[in-house]
Image (cartoon, rainbow, N blue to C red; front, top):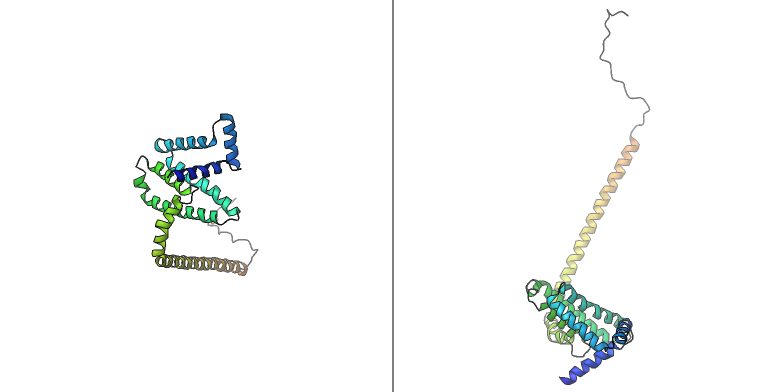
Length: 220
């Protein structure tokens, strides 16, 4: 346990002393406060933990923090030539997506627990931790992978049916839209031909007959 903790701390220190925009800010704060950046990060983490229990917008903060750092590391993994970091963050996002689906259906009940968002943040930190046996690897290999291998055929059949249904619906919608456009165009052509075939006359319109009858006995 002590060895695992020391290894985690060493990797954390290594990440905090890498050359990037975040560590540059930490370096500036470290020089002004004379406090090691490791303790600064731990202090901020403690404040966030307190905020997740008693503060406002805990759901947004926990989801935001569970997205920002992994997204940053994923971009670095895409731009690197190594394969291990790609596998690491693909595993994380698979677990993150599965957790999001479960949370969608259970959040209305779990959100009432006072420490729910704190536990959620701890779970996400464990999943993104820079260690080989982090939460993403554990949950993927022990939960998601066995479930997928057991139900792979059913999942593929369902995906194929959903794809066929979506494709057929889209084709029907395209066909209906094409027929509607063709009908409108045909009607416009008929109206134009009817307007061209109508006779053009320059005769003035007929005047209405006068209903006034002159009195024959009337004299000027």
